[in-house]
Image (cartoon, rainbow, N blue to C red):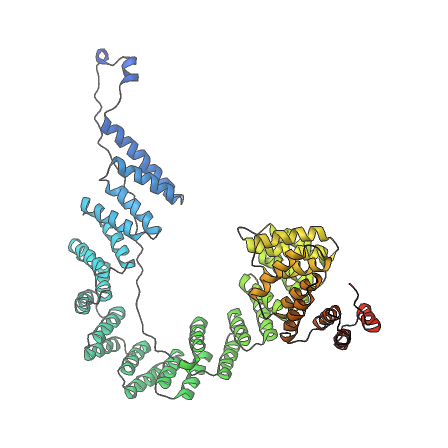
Length: 592
């Protein structure tokens, strides 16, 4: 078990202020009646150019803020850029534009704008805070620390600023300076777990191990009943190679808190590092059984252990044991069933894995990923009735998911529900958006259904559309080529399509059979014989159809005795048909 190092992360949400840009307002002069301008003068006179520009600026700025609040970022960027064309020194426009660039992960533009805004308006702390945040995200930790240092000069009692300065100095590996900052913070707050742990890690990096131990000791003295602190001390001893003292502190946790489940994981790590894998596993099991440890922690540890068995020492039977313990401890948590399913899938136990996933769907029926996993396993098992039933349930729960309709159509084809296939395809296509490949696969299925019902012209039209949309749909290319060969039409086209398929899959017996059959139909019997022999060689299941086809080719090559021999082999494998019997009986090839 890999030792877990505690890291502290602080997320700060900076609140932006809405900066109004106020223009210079002119005092209104009260005119005497006889000095009032004429109506003509009112219509023709224009306001001073500065005031007009300010009005235009204010209009654009307010509009930009509105567009920003509506989520129209690009429009807001355009409007704020217009603001800066009118007033290149508007720090408020720069700030608002910087926030938009930051949202778009354009941190370079955002930081340049903020740097200039701060030069123009150094008293506005919100500009500095946003810039510091961007520096953090771009790992410019030292620059961010400098900003907080400046902010502290104005607000020396702001503990948040002081903490961020310390954390950023640590991030920039200025360990000694960071420790000084943490000490100042500790002077104001007193002994604090977060500060002490941070200092302990910095002291270790500096090679000041005794001071590191001192920080944890200080925590223990502040609260001797807190088992976590003994765990920190044990981890520190273990990291320094002192397993004797490490074990002493782990056992201390058990004394203080006998029900503490987390200590079992610490002990498991300890025993694993000290070459005692069996003891390590026993402690892991105790932790998994503990009601004090939350499920997420157990699942994270399980994934860590099983992701790298060579490092964790976990064996397949131990993995199974941990999953069983999880199910016993958390019988109503659907995630446990998904974990067990994945474990079974790794062992190739598809049916058992599907059963676990179906149990999970009873607890969390609205998890689409679970249902999709079930449907894919149905397909892998070629359990078409199961796929049909489960996909119908999924369509009711997720009526906008096209993949579910597609898998239902696959089941319908296999179950010879051809009219239903066409109907489901039409319905599923309504939910396909910008996915030519899936659209092509849908059309392939509808083409299959139409072909099976004798509507060959419509079917071939759909096959053409299917391969146009998805030129890499090798199933469609293969089936279309085979159907064309059966009709005897467009054999050159069929050969091109089938040739493309076997170029990609040169050892697939089904695809080789199709190519050989297209060549057979073209009268190229010697070449057809070569590819059919390759198909038979690669056919692990010894399909009767391939043997019958090979016999047909041999007959055309005037090898009648050999042809009959392969027809009889096909019959003995269960390929019983009147046409095959007729071939054998009359020792002659008959067209299907």
